[in-house]
Amino acid sequence: MNKITIFLSFLFLSFTVTTLAQKKKSIIRTLIVDGQNNHVQWPKITFMMKNYLEETGKFKVDVQRTKYTWLGEEFIKKFPIEGLGETEAMKKSQTDPDFKPDFSKYDLVICNFGWNAAPWPEETQKNFEKYMKKGGGLVVIHAADNSFPQWPDYNKMIGLGGWGDRTEKDGPYVYYNNEGTLVKDNSAGKAGSHGPEHEYVIEIRNSEHPITKGMPTKWLHAKDELYDRLRGPAENMEVLATAFSAKDKRGTERHEPMLLTLNYGKGRIFHTPMGHIDYSVECVGFITCLLRGSEWAATGKVTLPIPQDFPTAEKTSSRAFK
Image 1 (tube, rainbow, N blue to C red):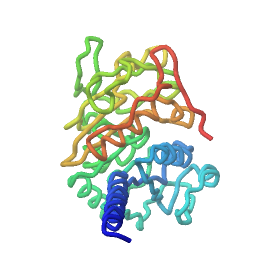
Image 2 (cartoon, one colour; image 1 turned 180 degrees about the vertical axis):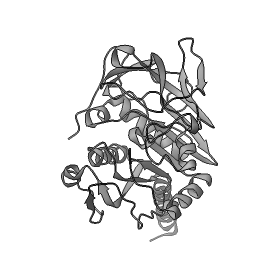
Image 3 (cartoon, helix red, strand yellow; image 1 turned 180 degrees about the horizontal axis):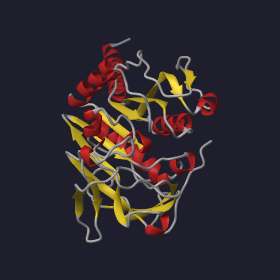
């Protein structure tokens, strides 16, 4: 083998190693946490989100589940996830003292807990706060904004929440009025309500944010719960999109936050109250928001495109999950 051949072989090897290292570095290490949620399909929703994220080639997703689970047992069996240990179904939510994820291993955490989930161990709460303050990423899906009402820093991370005895003591009710002004209403009232599931229009309020850039100004979301009257600290928070909660759907007649971004320390959070059930999560609009919101929370940037089958203002678009 002559010197030129050796040199070219060395260059090729160096290029290959560098490319593989760069590809590995660009993968977003993601952890979905779940285990207790009043929305019984939560194990399927976790399974779906893991698949959607990994299909992009940008995410490597692990799941960590509390040992004690509450509701969803049928779906735990139908949608098994490799590497998860045995769980024990409880009639009432119960704190798992051994639920201690190593958050430092991940760029992103997705919370799929729900209403009435038992608190995490205090040590785990503190570790998660440290993780976020140092620059971790968090995605909050649907009923995860019902969770942990007694955890002050979690409420700061999600910005707005509902149920769990949340009231004006937890922060203002935040919405857009018909004049397009963001309102923070400090009057007394309970946090969290919704009418029957239905399709509803998402209205983008900031079309220049990396998550929403390129989306239609209005698009029709598939059948879902429309959360309204959410309250919370609402600090370091931006409302990217809203949906109108109509009176004929037992709504507020106000434009309610549907896509939110927040900062907590150096951490970034993407929060959507959408995603009640499998057919809600099959909406291409929801999938796109999940993917782009996750990439932004983890990196501060968005490279994933708006797909061709994205919904329009008049028509929903869904992909049947198989």
